[in-house]
Image 1 (tube, rainbow, N blue to C red):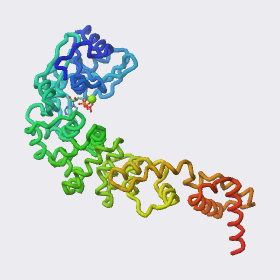
Image 2: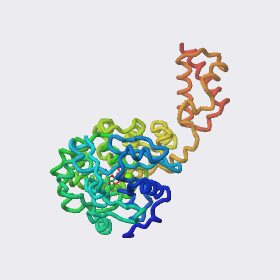
Image 3: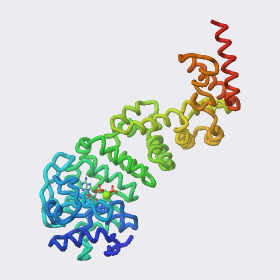
Length: 408
Ligand code: ATP
Ligand code: MG
Protein backbone atom coordinates (compact mmCIF):
# COMPACT_ATOMS: atom_id res chain seq x y z
CA UNK A 1 0.00 0.00 0.00
CA UNK A 2 1.26 3.52 -0.64
CA UNK A 3 1.03 5.89 2.30
CA UNK A 4 0.99 9.15 0.52
CA UNK A 5 -1.13 10.76 -2.14
CA UNK A 6 0.57 12.97 -4.70
CA UNK A 7 -1.12 15.38 -7.10
CA UNK A 8 -0.17 13.07 -9.99
CA UNK A 9 -2.39 10.32 -8.50
CA UNK A 10 -5.39 12.53 -9.22
CA UNK A 11 -6.70 12.81 -12.80
CA UNK A 12 -6.11 16.21 -14.38
CA UNK A 13 -9.83 17.05 -14.85
CA UNK A 14 -10.39 16.50 -11.11
CA UNK A 15 -7.47 18.80 -10.28
CA UNK A 16 -8.89 21.40 -12.65
CA UNK A 17 -12.18 21.37 -10.73
CA UNK A 18 -10.30 21.97 -7.48
CA UNK A 19 -8.33 24.78 -9.14
CA UNK A 20 -11.51 26.49 -10.26
CA UNK A 21 -12.86 26.28 -6.71
CA UNK A 22 -9.54 27.73 -5.45
CA UNK A 23 -9.65 30.60 -7.97
CA UNK A 24 -13.06 31.45 -6.57
CA UNK A 25 -11.66 31.65 -3.07
CA UNK A 26 -12.94 28.23 -1.95
CA UNK A 27 -11.37 24.81 -1.51
CA UNK A 28 -11.96 21.46 -3.11
CA UNK A 29 -11.03 18.05 -1.75
CA UNK A 30 -11.06 14.62 -3.26
CA UNK A 31 -12.88 12.53 -0.64
CA UNK A 32 -13.95 9.10 0.40
CA UNK A 33 -13.73 5.80 -1.42
CA UNK A 34 -11.58 6.99 -4.31
CA UNK A 35 -8.69 7.91 -1.99
CA UNK A 36 -9.06 4.58 -0.21
CA UNK A 37 -8.88 2.82 -3.55
CA UNK A 38 -5.83 4.61 -4.96
CA UNK A 39 -3.96 4.14 -1.68
CA UNK A 40 -4.65 0.42 -2.05
CA UNK A 41 -3.24 0.59 -5.54
CA UNK A 42 -6.66 0.00 -7.12
CA UNK A 43 -8.26 2.14 -9.78
CA UNK A 44 -10.88 4.47 -8.32
CA UNK A 45 -14.40 3.85 -9.59
CA UNK A 46 -15.67 7.41 -9.21
CA UNK A 47 -14.13 10.67 -8.05
CA UNK A 48 -16.14 12.47 -5.41
CA UNK A 49 -15.32 16.02 -4.44
CA UNK A 50 -16.08 18.00 -1.30
CA UNK A 51 -16.01 21.77 -1.11
CA UNK A 52 -16.57 24.55 1.38
CA UNK A 53 -18.47 26.44 -1.32
CA UNK A 54 -22.27 26.40 -1.05
CA UNK A 55 -24.13 24.54 -3.81
CA UNK A 56 -25.48 27.79 -5.26
CA UNK A 57 -21.90 29.12 -5.51
CA UNK A 58 -20.71 25.91 -7.19
CA UNK A 59 -23.52 26.27 -9.72
CA UNK A 60 -22.16 29.71 -10.66
CA UNK A 61 -18.53 28.59 -10.97
CA UNK A 62 -18.98 25.94 -13.64
CA UNK A 63 -20.71 26.17 -17.00
CA UNK A 64 -22.45 22.79 -16.87
CA UNK A 65 -23.90 21.77 -13.51
CA UNK A 66 -26.76 19.37 -12.86
CA UNK A 67 -28.49 19.85 -9.48
CA UNK A 68 -28.60 16.08 -8.81
CA UNK A 69 -29.05 16.22 -5.05
CA UNK A 70 -28.95 19.91 -4.35
CA UNK A 71 -31.16 19.57 -1.24
CA UNK A 72 -28.37 17.42 0.29
CA UNK A 73 -25.67 19.77 -0.99
CA UNK A 74 -24.66 17.69 -4.01
CA UNK A 75 -24.40 18.87 -7.60
CA UNK A 76 -22.90 17.09 -10.58
CA UNK A 77 -20.36 19.11 -12.52
CA UNK A 78 -19.88 18.06 -16.13
CA UNK A 79 -16.29 18.48 -17.17
CA UNK A 80 -14.39 17.07 -20.12
CA UNK A 81 -16.93 14.39 -20.86
CA UNK A 82 -17.41 13.16 -17.29
CA UNK A 83 -19.68 14.01 -14.37
CA UNK A 84 -18.26 14.69 -10.91
CA UNK A 85 -20.31 14.87 -7.74
CA UNK A 86 -19.37 17.97 -5.80
CA UNK A 87 -20.81 18.04 -2.30
CA UNK A 88 -20.74 20.93 0.13
CA UNK A 89 -19.17 20.05 3.49
CA UNK A 90 -21.85 18.73 5.81
CA UNK A 91 -22.00 18.48 9.54
CA UNK A 92 -23.02 15.83 12.01
CA UNK A 93 -26.54 15.08 13.10
CA UNK A 94 -27.58 14.70 9.52
CA UNK A 95 -28.98 11.22 10.19
CA UNK A 96 -31.91 10.80 12.51
CA UNK A 97 -34.30 8.24 11.06
CA UNK A 98 -31.78 5.45 10.55
CA UNK A 99 -31.88 5.81 6.80
CA UNK A 100 -31.33 9.13 5.12
CA UNK A 101 -30.30 12.51 6.37
CA UNK A 102 -33.46 14.49 7.03
CA UNK A 103 -31.90 17.92 7.04
CA UNK A 104 -28.58 19.31 5.92
CA UNK A 105 -26.27 21.41 7.97
CA UNK A 106 -23.38 22.96 6.05
CA UNK A 107 -20.03 23.47 7.76
CA UNK A 108 -16.71 24.98 6.71
CA UNK A 109 -14.34 22.51 8.36
CA UNK A 110 -13.35 19.50 6.24
CA UNK A 111 -12.61 17.54 9.43
CA UNK A 112 -16.17 17.98 10.60
CA UNK A 113 -17.38 16.62 7.26
CA UNK A 114 -15.05 13.64 7.60
CA UNK A 115 -16.34 12.93 11.11
CA UNK A 116 -19.82 12.03 9.82
CA UNK A 117 -18.44 9.45 7.39
CA UNK A 118 -18.79 5.78 8.15
CA UNK A 119 -15.34 4.20 8.42
CA UNK A 120 -11.88 5.63 9.05
CA UNK A 121 -10.64 4.34 5.68
CA UNK A 122 -13.46 6.32 4.01
CA UNK A 123 -12.83 9.45 6.08
CA UNK A 124 -9.87 10.78 4.10
CA UNK A 125 -9.71 13.99 2.10
CA UNK A 126 -7.01 15.35 -0.18
CA UNK A 127 -6.66 18.88 -1.50
CA UNK A 128 -4.57 18.52 -4.66
CA UNK A 129 -4.02 22.29 -4.99
CA UNK A 130 -2.45 22.56 -1.53
CA UNK A 131 -1.15 18.97 -1.75
CA UNK A 132 -2.60 18.35 1.69
CA UNK A 133 -4.07 15.13 3.07
CA UNK A 134 -6.62 15.16 5.89
CA UNK A 135 -6.69 11.98 7.94
CA UNK A 136 -8.19 12.90 11.31
CA UNK A 137 -9.14 9.32 12.30
CA UNK A 138 -5.91 7.53 11.32
CA UNK A 139 -7.52 5.93 8.30
CA UNK A 140 -4.09 5.42 6.76
CA UNK A 141 -3.08 3.22 9.69
CA UNK A 142 -6.28 1.19 9.32
CA UNK A 143 -5.67 0.86 5.60
CA UNK A 144 -2.22 -0.59 6.31
CA UNK A 145 -3.64 -2.85 9.00
CA UNK A 146 -6.55 -3.80 6.70
CA UNK A 147 -9.11 -2.86 9.30
CA UNK A 148 -12.66 -1.59 8.99
CA UNK A 149 -13.20 0.70 11.96
CA UNK A 150 -16.14 3.00 12.53
CA UNK A 151 -15.42 6.70 12.82
CA UNK A 152 -16.12 7.66 16.43
CA UNK A 153 -18.29 5.54 18.66
CA UNK A 154 -19.46 2.54 16.61
CA UNK A 155 -22.76 1.92 18.37
CA UNK A 156 -23.81 5.50 17.96
CA UNK A 157 -22.75 5.59 14.31
CA UNK A 158 -24.61 2.37 13.50
CA UNK A 159 -27.71 3.66 15.27
CA UNK A 160 -27.69 6.76 13.08
CA UNK A 161 -27.71 4.84 9.81
CA UNK A 162 -28.56 1.17 9.57
CA UNK A 163 -26.92 0.73 6.19
CA UNK A 164 -23.45 1.12 7.71
CA UNK A 165 -23.36 -2.33 9.29
CA UNK A 166 -24.07 -3.91 5.94
CA UNK A 167 -21.46 -1.71 4.25
CA UNK A 168 -18.97 -2.97 6.84
CA UNK A 169 -19.76 -6.57 5.90
CA UNK A 170 -19.56 -5.75 2.19
CA UNK A 171 -16.19 -3.99 2.57
CA UNK A 172 -14.89 -7.05 4.44
CA UNK A 173 -15.27 -8.87 1.13
CA UNK A 174 -14.53 -6.21 -1.48
CA UNK A 175 -11.44 -4.89 0.33
CA UNK A 176 -10.50 -8.20 2.00
CA UNK A 177 -10.22 -6.39 5.34
CA UNK A 178 -11.22 -7.51 8.84
CA UNK A 179 -13.65 -5.71 11.11
CA UNK A 180 -12.11 -4.03 14.10
CA UNK A 181 -13.46 -5.94 17.16
CA UNK A 182 -15.20 -2.94 18.75
CA UNK A 183 -16.82 -2.10 15.41
CA UNK A 184 -18.02 -5.66 14.98
CA UNK A 185 -19.32 -5.83 18.55
CA UNK A 186 -21.53 -2.81 17.87
CA UNK A 187 -23.45 -4.53 15.08
CA UNK A 188 -25.66 -6.87 17.12
CA UNK A 189 -27.02 -4.16 19.43
CA UNK A 190 -27.85 -1.89 16.48
CA UNK A 191 -29.67 -4.41 14.30
CA UNK A 192 -33.07 -2.77 14.93
CA UNK A 193 -31.75 0.24 12.99
CA UNK A 194 -30.46 -2.02 10.23
CA UNK A 195 -33.93 -3.55 9.95
CA UNK A 196 -35.32 -0.21 8.81
CA UNK A 197 -33.04 -0.05 5.76
CA UNK A 198 -34.94 -0.33 2.49
CA UNK A 199 -34.97 -3.63 0.59
CA UNK A 200 -33.41 -1.93 -2.45
CA UNK A 201 -30.38 -0.74 -0.54
CA UNK A 202 -29.87 -4.15 1.03
CA UNK A 203 -30.08 -5.77 -2.40
CA UNK A 204 -27.53 -3.31 -3.83
CA UNK A 205 -25.05 -4.13 -1.07
CA UNK A 206 -25.57 -7.86 -1.62
CA UNK A 207 -24.87 -7.43 -5.31
CA UNK A 208 -21.69 -5.47 -4.54
CA UNK A 209 -20.57 -8.16 -2.10
CA UNK A 210 -21.26 -10.82 -4.72
CA UNK A 211 -18.79 -9.10 -7.06
CA UNK A 212 -15.91 -9.46 -4.61
CA UNK A 213 -13.18 -12.00 -5.26
CA UNK A 214 -14.52 -13.98 -2.30
CA UNK A 215 -18.07 -12.97 -1.41
CA UNK A 216 -17.94 -15.55 1.42
CA UNK A 217 -16.05 -12.98 3.51
CA UNK A 218 -19.09 -10.69 3.57
CA UNK A 219 -21.64 -13.41 4.23
CA UNK A 220 -19.60 -14.90 7.06
CA UNK A 221 -19.54 -11.49 8.77
CA UNK A 222 -23.28 -11.12 8.14
CA UNK A 223 -24.00 -14.49 9.67
CA UNK A 224 -21.95 -14.14 12.82
CA UNK A 225 -23.17 -10.59 13.53
CA UNK A 226 -26.87 -11.24 12.99
CA UNK A 227 -27.17 -9.12 9.83
CA UNK A 228 -28.02 -12.25 7.85
CA UNK A 229 -30.66 -13.38 10.34
CA UNK A 230 -32.27 -9.95 9.98
CA UNK A 231 -32.27 -10.24 6.18
CA UNK A 232 -32.92 -13.90 5.50
CA UNK A 233 -33.66 -15.93 8.62
CA UNK A 234 -33.83 -19.33 6.89
CA UNK A 235 -30.40 -18.80 5.36
CA UNK A 236 -28.90 -17.76 8.69
CA UNK A 237 -30.44 -20.82 10.37
CA UNK A 238 -28.72 -23.30 8.07
CA UNK A 239 -26.35 -25.70 9.66
CA UNK A 240 -22.85 -24.22 9.84
CA UNK A 241 -21.40 -26.98 7.64
CA UNK A 242 -24.14 -26.58 5.02
CA UNK A 243 -23.66 -22.82 5.01
CA UNK A 244 -19.88 -23.14 4.64
CA UNK A 245 -20.28 -25.59 1.77
CA UNK A 246 -22.61 -23.13 0.05
CA UNK A 247 -20.04 -20.35 0.57
CA UNK A 248 -17.36 -22.48 -1.11
CA UNK A 249 -19.58 -22.74 -4.18
CA UNK A 250 -20.32 -19.00 -4.05
CA UNK A 251 -16.60 -18.18 -4.18
CA UNK A 252 -16.00 -20.70 -6.93
CA UNK A 253 -18.74 -19.33 -9.21
CA UNK A 254 -17.93 -16.45 -11.53
CA UNK A 255 -20.97 -14.32 -12.14
CA UNK A 256 -22.76 -12.53 -9.28
CA UNK A 257 -26.12 -14.02 -10.19
CA UNK A 258 -24.75 -17.57 -10.27
CA UNK A 259 -23.12 -16.82 -6.93
CA UNK A 260 -26.45 -15.71 -5.54
CA UNK A 261 -28.04 -18.94 -6.73
CA UNK A 262 -25.16 -20.90 -5.16
CA UNK A 263 -25.75 -19.13 -1.86
CA UNK A 264 -29.50 -19.85 -1.93
CA UNK A 265 -29.14 -23.39 -3.23
CA UNK A 266 -29.61 -25.10 0.15
CA UNK A 267 -33.01 -23.35 0.39
CA UNK A 268 -34.16 -24.24 -3.12
CA UNK A 269 -37.34 -25.98 -2.05
CA UNK A 270 -38.29 -23.25 0.40
CA UNK A 271 -39.78 -20.07 -0.97
CA UNK A 272 -36.70 -18.41 -2.43
CA UNK A 273 -38.91 -16.62 -4.95
CA UNK A 274 -40.79 -14.73 -2.25
CA UNK A 275 -37.50 -13.56 -0.77
CA UNK A 276 -36.17 -12.42 -4.16
CA UNK A 277 -39.39 -10.50 -4.74
CA UNK A 278 -39.28 -8.96 -1.29
CA UNK A 279 -35.76 -7.67 -1.93
CA UNK A 280 -36.85 -6.33 -5.30
CA UNK A 281 -34.56 -8.33 -7.52
CA UNK A 282 -35.38 -7.67 -11.17
CA UNK A 283 -37.72 -10.18 -12.81
CA UNK A 284 -34.96 -11.34 -15.13
CA UNK A 285 -32.64 -12.00 -12.18
CA UNK A 286 -35.36 -13.89 -10.30
CA UNK A 287 -36.05 -16.02 -13.34
CA UNK A 288 -32.37 -16.87 -13.71
CA UNK A 289 -31.92 -17.77 -10.05
CA UNK A 290 -35.08 -19.89 -9.96
CA UNK A 291 -34.11 -21.82 -13.07
CA UNK A 292 -30.67 -22.49 -11.65
CA UNK A 293 -32.14 -23.74 -8.39
CA UNK A 294 -34.71 -25.85 -10.14
CA UNK A 295 -32.56 -27.51 -12.78
CA UNK A 296 -29.02 -27.65 -11.40
CA UNK A 297 -29.41 -31.28 -10.36
CA UNK A 298 -31.57 -33.08 -12.93
CA UNK A 299 -32.45 -36.73 -12.53
CA UNK A 300 -32.71 -39.59 -14.96
CA UNK A 301 -30.63 -38.22 -17.82
CA UNK A 302 -29.23 -41.11 -19.83
CA UNK A 303 -29.44 -40.67 -23.59
CA UNK A 304 -28.52 -37.70 -25.78
CA UNK A 305 -32.27 -37.25 -26.33
CA UNK A 306 -32.70 -36.96 -22.54
CA UNK A 307 -30.09 -34.18 -22.58
CA UNK A 308 -31.99 -32.34 -25.33
CA UNK A 309 -35.32 -32.71 -23.50
CA UNK A 310 -33.71 -31.38 -20.35
CA UNK A 311 -32.21 -28.49 -22.32
CA UNK A 312 -35.66 -27.68 -23.72
CA UNK A 313 -37.07 -27.43 -20.18
CA UNK A 314 -34.21 -25.28 -18.93
CA UNK A 315 -34.26 -22.97 -21.94
CA UNK A 316 -31.24 -22.47 -24.17
CA UNK A 317 -30.39 -19.05 -22.71
CA UNK A 318 -30.13 -20.45 -19.18
CA UNK A 319 -28.16 -23.61 -19.94
CA UNK A 320 -24.65 -22.32 -19.26
CA UNK A 321 -25.38 -20.98 -15.83
CA UNK A 322 -27.61 -23.89 -14.86
CA UNK A 323 -24.86 -26.37 -15.70
CA UNK A 324 -22.25 -24.17 -14.04
CA UNK A 325 -24.21 -24.27 -10.78
CA UNK A 326 -24.83 -28.00 -11.26
CA UNK A 327 -21.10 -28.66 -11.47
CA UNK A 328 -20.49 -26.52 -8.37
CA UNK A 329 -23.04 -28.36 -6.24
CA UNK A 330 -21.71 -31.74 -7.30
CA UNK A 331 -24.35 -32.81 -9.79
CA UNK A 332 -23.37 -35.19 -12.55
CA UNK A 333 -21.38 -32.96 -14.94
CA UNK A 334 -23.51 -32.08 -17.94
CA UNK A 335 -21.68 -29.17 -19.54
CA UNK A 336 -19.94 -31.33 -22.16
CA UNK A 337 -23.12 -33.13 -23.14
CA UNK A 338 -25.12 -29.91 -23.20
CA UNK A 339 -22.54 -28.35 -25.51
CA UNK A 340 -22.86 -31.37 -27.79
CA UNK A 341 -26.47 -30.34 -28.47
CA UNK A 342 -25.09 -27.70 -30.82
CA UNK A 343 -27.89 -26.02 -32.71
CA UNK A 344 -30.32 -28.96 -32.59
CA UNK A 345 -33.84 -27.50 -32.23
CA UNK A 346 -35.17 -27.16 -28.71
CA UNK A 347 -38.35 -25.23 -29.55
CA UNK A 348 -40.92 -25.44 -32.34
CA UNK A 349 -39.65 -22.10 -33.60
CA UNK A 350 -36.27 -23.64 -34.29
CA UNK A 351 -37.71 -26.33 -36.56
CA UNK A 352 -36.80 -26.28 -40.26
CA UNK A 353 -40.48 -25.68 -41.03
CA UNK A 354 -43.07 -23.28 -39.66
CA UNK A 355 -46.83 -23.14 -39.29
CA UNK A 356 -47.26 -21.13 -42.47
CA UNK A 357 -45.47 -23.79 -44.53
CA UNK A 358 -47.64 -26.45 -42.93
CA UNK A 359 -50.78 -24.53 -43.93
CA UNK A 360 -49.75 -24.00 -47.54
CA UNK A 361 -48.27 -27.46 -48.13
CA UNK A 362 -50.97 -29.48 -46.35
CA UNK A 363 -53.85 -27.15 -47.17
CA UNK A 364 -54.56 -26.54 -43.47
CA UNK A 365 -56.50 -23.66 -41.96
CA UNK A 366 -55.23 -21.75 -38.91
CA UNK A 367 -56.18 -23.55 -35.71
CA UNK A 368 -54.87 -25.65 -32.83
CA UNK A 369 -53.89 -28.47 -35.19
CA UNK A 370 -50.92 -26.43 -36.39
CA UNK A 371 -49.42 -26.10 -32.94
CA UNK A 372 -50.12 -29.75 -32.20
CA UNK A 373 -48.37 -30.88 -35.37
CA UNK A 374 -45.35 -28.67 -34.64
CA UNK A 375 -45.11 -30.03 -31.08
CA UNK A 376 -45.21 -33.53 -32.45
CA UNK A 377 -42.49 -32.77 -34.97
CA UNK A 378 -40.36 -31.28 -32.22
CA UNK A 379 -40.76 -34.46 -30.15
CA UNK A 380 -39.50 -36.49 -33.09
CA UNK A 381 -36.62 -34.09 -33.71
CA UNK A 382 -35.63 -34.16 -30.04
CA UNK A 383 -35.18 -37.91 -30.44
CA UNK A 384 -33.48 -37.62 -33.85
CA UNK A 385 -32.15 -34.16 -34.73
CA UNK A 386 -31.20 -35.35 -38.24
CA UNK A 387 -34.94 -35.35 -39.08
CA UNK A 388 -34.90 -31.55 -38.97
CA UNK A 389 -35.11 -30.74 -42.70
CA UNK A 390 -37.99 -29.05 -44.46
CA UNK A 391 -38.73 -32.07 -46.66
CA UNK A 392 -38.29 -34.61 -43.87
CA UNK A 393 -40.59 -32.72 -41.52
CA UNK A 394 -43.19 -32.15 -44.23
CA UNK A 395 -43.30 -35.86 -44.94
CA UNK A 396 -43.68 -36.59 -41.22
CA UNK A 397 -46.41 -33.99 -40.87
CA UNK A 398 -48.32 -35.40 -43.84
CA UNK A 399 -48.26 -38.94 -42.49
CA UNK A 400 -49.38 -37.75 -39.07
CA UNK A 401 -52.11 -35.50 -40.46
CA UNK A 402 -53.51 -38.26 -42.63
CA UNK A 403 -53.44 -40.73 -39.75
CA UNK A 404 -55.43 -38.23 -37.71
CA UNK A 405 -57.94 -37.58 -40.47
CA UNK A 406 -58.56 -41.33 -40.71
CA UNK A 407 -59.06 -41.64 -36.93
CA UNK A 408 -61.73 -38.93 -37.03
P1 ATP B 1 -17.97 2.08 -3.30
O1 ATP B 1 -18.04 3.24 -4.23
O2 ATP B 1 -16.90 1.12 -3.55
O3 ATP B 1 -19.29 1.44 -3.09
P2 ATP B 1 -17.61 4.11 -1.33
O4 ATP B 1 -17.02 4.11 0.05
O5 ATP B 1 -17.00 5.03 -2.32
O6 ATP B 1 -17.59 2.63 -1.85
P3 ATP B 1 -20.01 5.55 -1.81
O7 ATP B 1 -21.43 5.11 -1.60
O8 ATP B 1 -19.52 5.89 -3.16
O9 ATP B 1 -19.14 4.39 -1.18
O10 ATP B 1 -19.79 6.76 -0.80
C1 ATP B 1 -18.74 7.68 -0.90
C2 ATP B 1 -18.28 8.09 0.49
O11 ATP B 1 -19.38 8.64 1.23
C3 ATP B 1 -17.78 6.95 1.37
O12 ATP B 1 -16.43 6.65 1.10
C4 ATP B 1 -18.00 7.51 2.75
O13 ATP B 1 -17.00 8.46 3.08
C5 ATP B 1 -19.31 8.25 2.60
N1 ATP B 1 -20.47 7.38 2.90
C6 ATP B 1 -21.15 6.62 2.03
N2 ATP B 1 -22.17 5.99 2.62
C7 ATP B 1 -22.14 6.39 3.92
C8 ATP B 1 -22.95 6.11 5.06
N3 ATP B 1 -23.99 5.27 4.97
N4 ATP B 1 -22.63 6.71 6.23
C9 ATP B 1 -21.60 7.56 6.32
N5 ATP B 1 -20.80 7.86 5.29
C10 ATP B 1 -21.06 7.30 4.09
MG1 MG C 1 -17.75 5.36 -4.31
